[in-house]
Length: 284
Image (cartoon, rainbow, N blue to C red; front, side, top):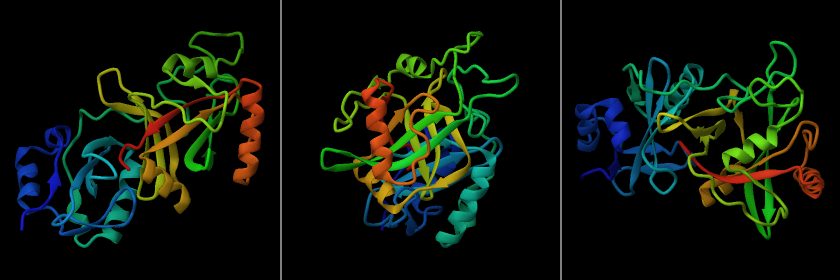
C-alpha cells in the first residue's frame, strides 16, 4: 500500500533525491509514528503525513508529523537540541535511530545564542552582557477561546545597535518588525509573515524570524527546550498558531497563574506597553 507522504522541495534539497525517493517508496518511512507536533499516533498508510527535517550544524534528524498539524519543512535547531530529538524519536518510534540522517547541512542558518536576543538588534544592558529574554507560556482568552500565548519580557533595556543612551527601544524594534500595539486582549492580532514558533517533541524550542537569505532563523532560542502544558499545546495545534505578546522589562514579571498573567497584561495594555502578533507553528 503506498504511503501518503509529503516531502517538500526544501527537505528534498537537504536529503537528496535518492533518499527522498526511498521515503516516498516506503523503504525509509515508518508505517506508524508519533507526530512531532501533537504527540499523537499517525499512520503513513491512512493519513497525509509531513516529513520534518531538524537540521543542526553537522547532522540532521528526520521526523514525521500529521499534515494537518504542520507542512513538510526544514527546521534549524542547535546540535544539543538535535541530540535530544534523536533520543525522543528513538524512544517513541520503532526503528527510531534509523531516522538520523548523518549528512552535513552547510546551508542551514545558524541558530541564535540560547536564551539571548538573536538577530534582532540589541544593546547590552551592561558591558559584555546582553539582555536576556524571559518567556512565560499561558492560555489567554480572546473572547471565549483560549489562545496559546507567549509573553516575552527582557531582563533590561534593549536599544538599537550603537545606542549609548540606555533608552529601552524593545517595543519600537518589534514594531519595526511588524508587531502591533495591543488595545484589547480579547482581539486576536494579525499573523506576522515570516515569523513562527517552534514547538517540537511537546516542548518550546524557539521563536523564528525571517532570514535575510530566505527561510527562517532563530530570534529567541531556549537553552533547553521548555515543557509546555497539554492544554497549551492542544490550543496551539488546534489553531495552528501562537500569540506572542512583548512588553518592556519589569512590566509583567513571571506570573505563577494564568489569571494573574492576564491581569498583568491588562495593566500593561492600559499603559500602552504591549505589542503582539499571531505566529504560526513551525516544526510543530
